[in-house]
Image (cartoon, rainbow, N blue to C red; front, side, top):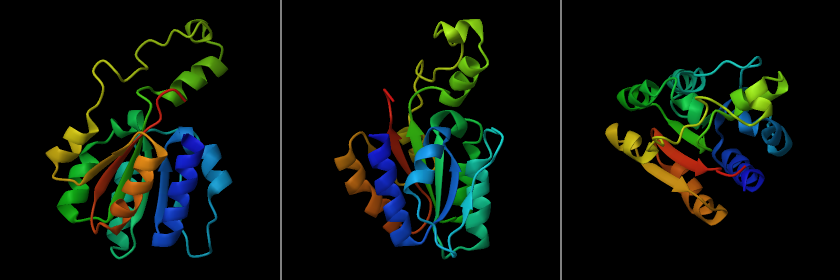
Length: 181
């Protein structure tokens, strides 16, 4: 699902002329595969593994150029570092599309722990790295800030939601489930 979802999202972004902020580590490799940026496109991501910067950066970028939508890819874990960016986007009427890839875990931290050879990680025991007890209710979070919200569990859902997301003027949230990936 993830590869197909990213292909569809990247195509939509080219149609709507988005600036792109990427803090969803699960998408980095696929974005490089599917992105076809032109000279007018802007792409922001951090090299080195910082978490929590993407959503507030997207709001600031949107305030700089209010006529151009900003697509912000963020993982569910990273989104928990700065949920106040949703409030800021609403308060400033920033044209940001928050696309939250939800796998209910801190995948990047789990991969790094395995890579570094941590004993528990090698045994697939990850303390404090799942986000499922309780799971984050992104619909309720969006509703708290009066943000339009769509969710996608399938490519069909995503195909329906993406045009609505990008046609909406102002901030909005799209949650893309990537459980099992």
